[in-house]
Image (cartoon, rainbow, N blue to C red; front, side, top):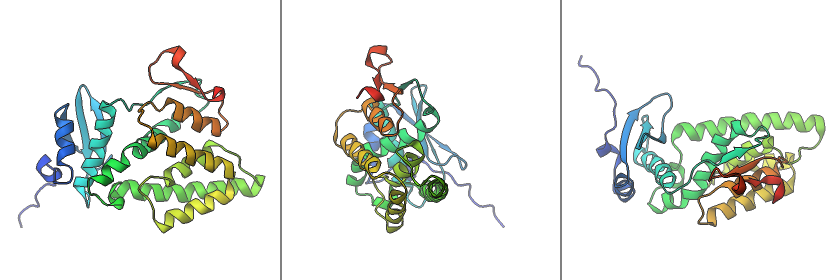
Length: 240
């Protein structure tokens, strides 16, 4: 029996009529390198002046590719993680939060290419969000049963901001959101919703103010953010 052909995506497999214009726009500015990675899956980063996109087999690979190209495009345009000052324990969760913030910034562009809402996240990421939401919701319920109340905190922020992914309108996610809102403080969720709406509608790619507002809502007044790296530009959560 002949061996199976080794799975591998080439650019010709990923560039379609849906994402061709985006690919050409990015490729004019930076070279794009594909690396198969069945563990990491789909990801994108700029390394030594080259856009490195990792991948694994997907149901809609052109949509996954477009998603990662948007990460590269917006990073080239200036959407980068801000410097953190007096981190107040937020450093570990910033990569996840920054990724979600990026999604809110470029989702409309993805959707306008003609892709479906459910194609925005690859299969693995969508499943992971569901698993983490269930896990965190259980932990929050345990805390709530002991204390009777959970004020604005990073414990509420993480599952909520993951569930608020801009593409997800599913009934399951709506139910998760309703359940978490019964546990936490109503004003906290309203504040996060307003912050995400403002960030999405603003032209700026500097997320410093957005993160300062988020962590002010999470009772982290000392933490500050700055994209430039200059001390005088740091926006401290408690000062806004």
